[in-house]
Length: 251
Length: 312
Ligand SMILES: Cc1cc2nc3c(=O)[nH]c(=O)nc-3n(C[C@H](O)[C@H](O)[C@H](O)COP(=O)(O)OP(=O)(O)OC[C@H]3O[C@@H](n4cnc5c(N)ncnc54)[C@H](O)[C@@H]3O)c2cc1C
Ligand SMILES: Cc1cc2nc3c(=O)[nH]c(=O)nc-3n(C[C@H](O)[C@H](O)[C@H](O)COP(=O)(O)O)c2cc1C
Ligand code: FES
Image (cartoon, rainbow over all chains, first blue to last red; front, side, top):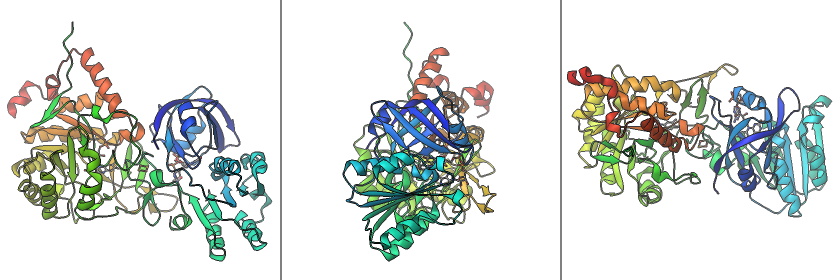
C-alpha cells in the first residue's frame, strides 16, 4: 500500500440538507488506487485546521472522480461543506487497510454518513457473487444515501427516524436471522447503538463482525500515533479503520 | 554566473547537508506506508523516542485541536529497546542519511542504558535525550529539575561517545539556565523546545478532551515561544541549538536560524502537509537566492547583531 498527495478540484457540490453535503472531487491518481475500506484526508489549502478523514461513497477510475459525503459536526467539516465547484482541496490517500475479503453471506449495517463506506464494499461483494443484505437507517429518506444503488445490489431493509418507531435496523437483522438467514459476516458503520445491537446479535449467533471506527486523526498516515483505539490501541489510520466489533464497544 | 547556494550546516561535529529534519515523534519510515518523496533530501532523520521497557502509550483520545495548535498526549508508545534494535532500527540503518535516535528514560540509569546500546551502532549519528516529554508519568520531567537533568545527561554522557543533544521544555523559568546545566553535564547541543503543557475541556460533556487529562501543545502557537527559548539558550551556552516549535515554512526556518539555531526540526506541520519539509527546502533556496546569501553561516545568529555577540 502506498499513498500520495494530490491537489483535487471540486467538480460538483450537492447539499442534501443543511448538515449533509456530497462533494465530487477530481483526484485521478487516488481514484485509481483506492480500494474499499480505505479513506482519504481532505484539507482546503487555506485552512488552518488539520486535514479531516473522509471515507468516500464512491469513485470512478475512468473519470478520476471521488464522491465524498460530508456531515457538518464542527469547524473542519463546515469548511469542507463550503467548498464550491472549481475550488481546490488537498487530498492525501488512499489510507488505511483494505477490507479483507471473506465468503458471505454479508450483512452491511449503517446509519447516516456511516452508510457511505459500505457502498464500495457492496459493489465489491456483488462483483464477487456474494450474497449481501443491507440494513440502513437515516434521519430522512433523502439521507438514505444511494438507496437505489444498494437495492440493485441486494435486499435492503431501510429505516427512517421520521417514522419515530424507536427501532434499530439491527432489530431487523436479528429478526431475519431468527427466521433462518445465516450471514457469515456483519460490517457496521456509523452508530454506537448499531454497534451495540450487533454485539447482541453476536451473543446469540455465531457470526464474524467488524466495525468501521472513528478517532480524531492528526496525520492519517501513521506518523503521530494519535488515532489509537480499542483494546490494543491499534492505530486506526494504519491498521483500521475496520476493526473487530468488540473494539467498537470499548471505544 | 552566480555562486552556488549551500544549505549545509554543522551541529557541533555533526555535518548536515541542510538544516531540515523531522521532530521526534512526528515522522516514521518503518511502520506505515512510505512517504511519496525521497527522504534522503532531508538533513537528518530523528526517530520517535524509545524507552528501555516496552510501553503502550497513553489511553485515547490522544489528540485535541485548538486554534493554531495541536494538543497531544501520545505517551510514547514504544516497543522497548530490544525490539527497537531488532525490528525498528534496521529499517533506518540501511538509509544513507544522518540518523538521530531519541531516548526517553524514567531514571538516569535508563538514559545511560539506552545510550550505551546505541553507542555501538555506527549508523546512529547522534543521540537526542528527550528530557521534556509532558506525557509520561514522572513526578516531574528532568528538563524541569536542574539536578535531575544533570544526572540524566551525565549518565548518558558516561556511556556514549556519540554527540548528545538535550531536548528541553518550555515550561521552566529559563530554558537558557537549563541548557547551561545540560552543557555542563556534557551535552553537545540542545534541541529547543518540546511541547508546552496544555489541556482542553469538552464543554458538552464537562470532561477533559484528552484521555490522560493533560497533553502537550505543538504547532504554530508554539513558534514565538520556541524562538524566545532558542534565543535564551544561545545567550546562556556555547553549544549549538536545534530549533523546533511551530515551524511551517521556509520563512519560519529563517527566523530560527537568525535567532541562532544551527538546524531545525519540523513536527506538527507535517500533519497538515506530509511533504512540507521538502517544500521548505525548495523555498529556502529561493529565499537565499532572493537575498543573495550563499551559505547558512551568513544567516545563523544574524538577529543577535554585533553588540550582543560581544556580550556573549
Ligand atoms: C476513517 C474515517 C472516515 C470518516 N469518514 C467520514 C465521512 O465520509 N463523512 C463525514 O462526514 N465524516 C467522516 N469522518 C468523521 C470526520 O472525520 C469528522 O467528523 C471530522 O474530522 C470532524 O471535524 P470538525 O472540525 O468538523 O469537527 P471537530 O471540531 O473536530 O469535532 C466536532 C465534534 O465531533 C467529535 N469528533 C470529531 N472528530 C471525530 C471523530 N473522528 N470521531 C468521533 N468524534 C469526532 C468531536 O469530539 C466533537 O464533539 C470520518 C472519520 C474517520 C476517522
Ligand atoms: C504527536 C506528537 C508526538 C510527539 N512525540 C515526541 C517524542 O516521542 N519525543 C520527543 O522528544 N518529542 C515528541 N514530540 C514533540 C515534537 O518533537 C516537537 O518538539 C513539538 O511538537 C514542537 O514542534 P512542532 O510545533 O513543529 O510540532 C511530539 C509531538 C507531537 C505533536
Ligand atoms: S492519525 Fe496520525 S497516526 Fe493515525
